[in-house]
Length: 254
View (cartoon, rainbow, N blue to C red):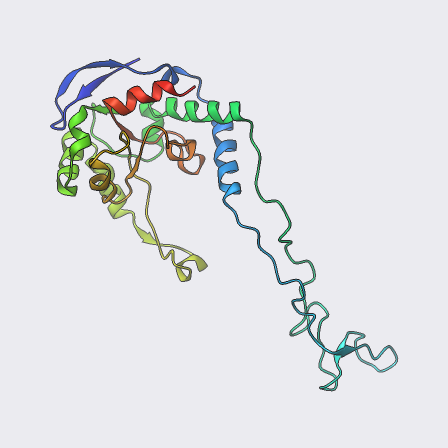
């Protein structure tokens, strides 16, 4: 499998053979399991305080009084307390902070998932089905010469996307930014932004800051790319832009 090496002006400069990972079988089931495992391992333990809802002086008056047999405050007459479903009472079945929320996955399966997600980025139909927009004739993944690593201004990075024919995907991200539905908009995540292209550059590249300023664009190094970067949310087929050096470093993935 080969792809053309492009300049930052969008002109072809030669051809490059893709690493063997791009020829692997695409396994959506393993990719989904790996992404689910990573999301589960980020969850934090949560639950009520150990004595929540039980910090009262209460007494059970017993039966024969024509009232429910629940604990009642000793200081305030018939005010119920502590029992579940009462004002100020404890929860009946609260979540346990000791519960292990993470999910384990074998190292070999994780490696297969990442390589499989990488192979999916070379399938144009999968990339388009995921929702990415780009000009006709563009063959993902895009491979750009070393000049992309030295870009210092965001305006220059935007022009590179225009020259490569993938700026329609940036417009899709900008136009797709919407107010989140539900309680999340009250919890410091009011807006939801669609996922745009992934740019993979070698460590220490100047262009990392320039591209990361563009909405929806993620910038990663070859050693930090995960299956969740290549298939956000478990949906395979992300639009990816590699520099030549970064692509060669992916050959070291085992």
